[in-house]
Length: 120
Length: 154
Image (tube, rainbow over all chains, first blue to last red; front, side, top):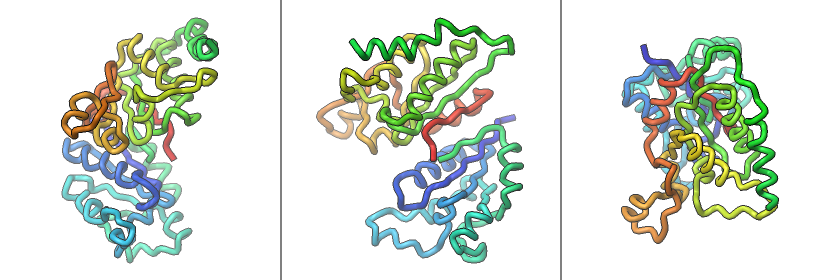
């Protein structure tokens, strides 16, 4: 039975390479068919906004990669309700699915449920 | 000379520590911060404490800015702690598996000879004991370890 891994992505999409590098861990693990989850927390929830203007920043858009997560077998995707609310975001406008909106209590349970946790 | 003093300070606790009475554990350690970050010094102390406690390190994985800690081209002022040298010696002396993420390394100019030649770069800065490899090595370590401990994250 492989160990499960929760990847917590806490950085905004354009603050540096962190969002991409967290996503790369998920995509690499998905390719090995490992039981993975990904939680978007704090500024990490900004990655979930549709209509990012990546070109204006001369960056590559991550949205397509995020949407590919489920194709790579990473279907346990979570977004922190508190982080969304703090940034005036609603769960209906997000570009990634399936996505579970989780409370702070749920997050404590999630971290407990996964064997290993990586935060980036 | 001063760096020697610091090194003694860092290495010192290894000689004075006592192995734990609990069963030994396997640790995987991931480092995301550059050599000059406080978290990199903490990671080194933690790694030393793991071995000194009689536990195993299945792999050290250097990711994100952590790859800078493995560059052979870092020059630390003489009166400061030479963290890249300490990591290199720690990995060599204990014959550990020190893996540098290839994607993160290429992005930040940390290349071994093979990659330097592949991309026609004038220099390589990743000699032994470091191994340049993919994220699969992180997942492999996660599977092999009882605990994954990360340093330098947000």
